[in-house]
Length: 131
Image (tube, rainbow, N blue to C red):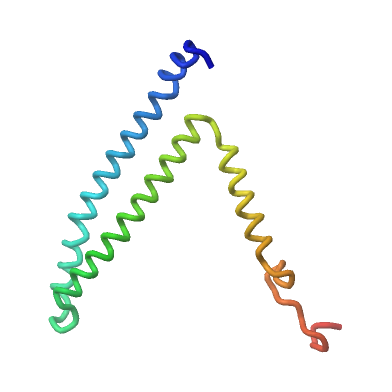
């Protein structure tokens, strides 16, 4: 790749990679703010409608923290997966993803026991199923 190829690559693919990354970063920031705003209001409203002896304020705060942490992690995972998909699209490397899927499937089936290849255990000797 020489200098002229680099100049042709940047407007063609590099710009879409940068714009896509910025859009994903914007969506991540909006999602984090939405999680921080919506989850506490929903859980506090839910706790207000429950009988007073069922949920203390400490329990509600623990639930808020747990659900916010879970949603943040899910949002981060989704953004990372979308970023990986963006890179695969820009560099036209979907075959890498197909190869990884085949590798995972092969490892999954290789780890199963010999009697469980078809999903059912083999019948024991002397059983009714063995003729």
